Length: 117
Length: 110
Image (tube, rainbow over all chains, first blue to last red):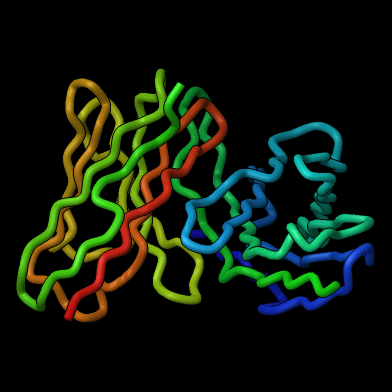
């Protein structure tokens, strides 16, 4: 089974500052990687995903993440945050299965990003 | 195109009761997964249904059961509710390599 570690439970930053949210996963074999965002009292929205190919993945709202296989990491970054980015962010991993749709996701415990004016 | 919908949005039950939560998938999606998200935690996988059969199951007791209907909608049933079952229950439906989440059902067990 996979495990996902999000190293920071809370990240406070000022508006327009850069931010990095860290994520490490346990398995070194082939994986699919995801970042989701959750606003208060809502479900999860996909920010970006890595399935294969380029290790730098760009997502919605100016976010990007870099897959590092040797360090089993998938850190999320944004060069300049806005107040509206305040939310909970979850890293997730799944084991790809050939010829099959996406199976279970293993989630980290989340990182609360708070952007201050 | 409606996204993933869940009902009800909120539910209050007492210990020992039974509950049924419902999920309607995004159009064209035939695979449904259920997750439990306790307060301050990440979602935990309960099970996944495909072609009306349970395809994968997480580490949850048999009190948690499910069903998928021919129209791909799904139900999650929890029997003999415990205080620890209080959580946000999320349904997700698949495109091939992506899961789309519904808004969740907030279950409170008193």
